[in-house]
Length: 385
Image (cartoon, one colour):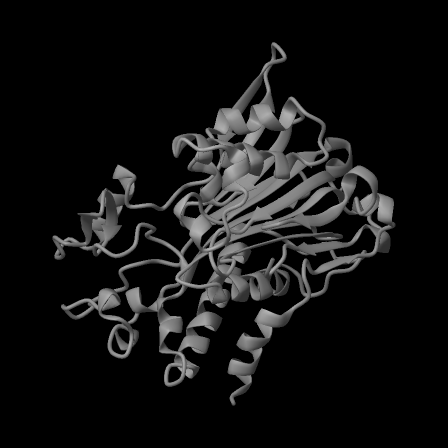
């Protein structure tokens, strides 16, 4: 068995909720109201501390195998938040969670230490995405003879990097980050900071048509939604090699993935939209979530929920609100929805990942000057429930 195959299979047997945190238990939010645990198909970390404030994380499983992955990394370099919404299987999201942050460190920093600040730019983030895509493509190529369906697995990616007093947002697919902002009159507003690459958005359909002027079937309305080549809704991802390279769009992958005409150019992209935003004092929080949350909650409702309750349990509270709305749409009780097992649960809602980041501008503005070994944090949500 090849080394790559062993590495891929080993992803399925990692400990529940991988956490590496050098801070004490109170700072990490691992006791009292900041506890980490699970409730059926729900994994949560109610409250923790990162170098720029506090955070809350949660994920609910709906698929037979959890296809969402996420992480928060915080230390001398700043803070990195990633939400990876997989499709077709869990492998791409897991691979991205294992490698994207490491590539980001390599390209942004020769060495992360108290003496080395490194540099974060749109270019360094772009290079990290490119290296992650190339790594997964190499894995698909190596395992083609034994695991050809790996070519049909992909993941949306949403990344936020807080570097000094700037927020970088990089996105592939349709996960979303929403800013909770305090207005001059004291009211709250919700501002979406990420771009969504979904063929149901008219501007994405025009983008695809511009990129493929010789293909009248580049977007097709099928099963009630717009899809790239009538197959997939998102237009950008890591993975989905069957939509990017001709050598992976052939037998033995399933007929529903195969495209009749030769592929003149990639039909999907792994180039993220990257935006930068100065962090102003009236910015209160950031909600990073996979599209399963936004299917049921508006940006405004999510911000309202976060800021009308205690910080502890914010992510879990958002997921509960989404599930209550999913139950209401099906004219059933939330308590009955909770009893439905994974796989069947997918008919009611998707896997949902939420990370809520609260912004402490005093801590953020100090930059590396307040860093110590004890402030390092690395949390990854559970691989399985």
